[in-house]
Image (cartoon, rainbow, N blue to C red; front, side, top):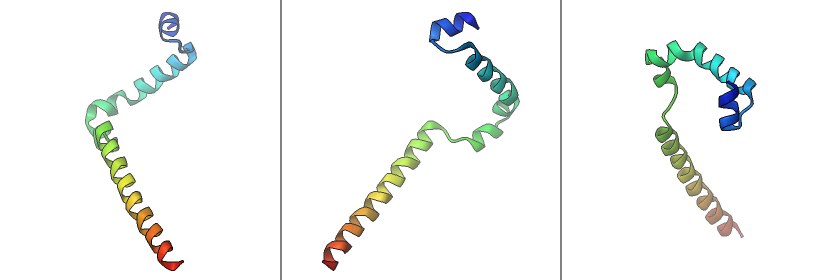
Amino acid sequence: MAQLSSQYGVHPNQIGRWKKELLEKLPEIFSGKWRKEHKTEAEMIAELYQQIGQLKVENDWLKKKSQLLR
């Protein structure tokens, strides 16, 4: 752990916590259950872009509506 700690600039305690968490979740990760519960990075990015688009449409609509009320 000391070697990893110095190589990557991470505190040894943090590496220990990551290792503990990995060992606890390892069976779940390889069972396929993990994939169903956790989205891939690409899925998350796509969902965020969709949310941004929706918020932009709503924001533009509100701007138009507020200009008409003036």
